[in-house]
Structures are given as C-alpha cells and as structure tokens.
Amino acid sequence: MHEILAFGLDLGAKILKVLIGLLKNLRTNLLLDMTKLHQS
Image (cartoon, rainbow, N blue to C red; front, top):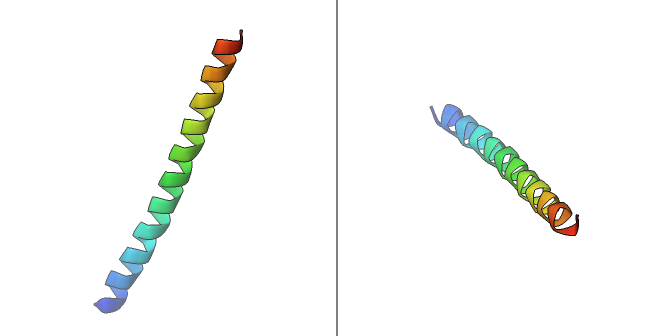
C-alpha cells in the first residue's frame, strides 16, 4: 500500500514540474509577443 502511495506522489510531483515548466514557457512567450507588439 505504501509503495503505491509513494509512486503516486512521485508521479504527481513529476506532472506538477512539467505543468509548471509549460506555464513558465507560455508566460515568457506571451511576454515576448507583447514586447513585439509594442515595438511595431
């Protein structure tokens, strides 16, 4: 039982890291788009 719980927590942590990475990429891309719009 504990092994399943540990596996689930590990998996959840990995998924969270991926999601946070994607959000950071999206945010930086949006900021870059905004600066491009302001420059033109």
